[in-house]
Length: 152
Figure 1 (cartoon, rainbow, N blue to C red):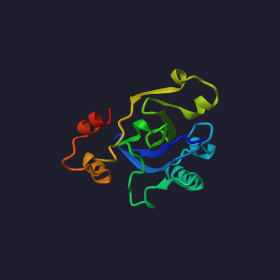
Figure 2 (cartoon, rainbow, N blue to C red; figure 1 turned 180 degrees about the horizontal axis):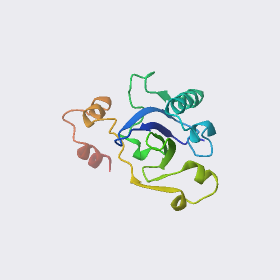
Figure 3 (cartoon, one colour; figure 1 turned 90 degrees about the vertical axis):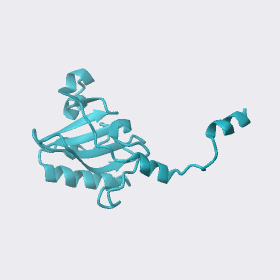
Figure 4 (spheres, rainbow, N blue to C red; figure 1 turned 120 degrees about the vertical axis):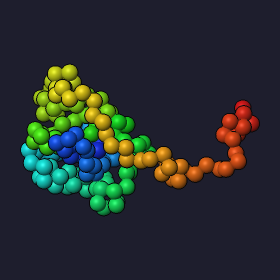
């Protein structure tokens, strides 16, 4: 499937370190189980790197830390998986919503039952507006509203 996902390590202070992203197989039922059950940060990172490379995704170090999506953070990504350093558990967030236990979801629990009570995660902003402008430069002196009116 073409379900996109991002992977992070969430630090003691709530900081988020992006590891990588995948264009496909990001659904909770398609993620390698060794990622979801991992209790060690280093082994989580290694499992994520293997998974992302198998799915032709992007590893932060391989692409010089350049964010692969058109959106500025993980709120628009289908699924985000995070290794929570404080608890030694992997957590999942669907499209920037509630933070859940992926194992409970795999066991058939609904999203409310799998909620871990963390509220909404604040993801780091990976693209600043200036970068977006440089990637998609506009034509100076052309008013988009004028172009739209002419096309009607």
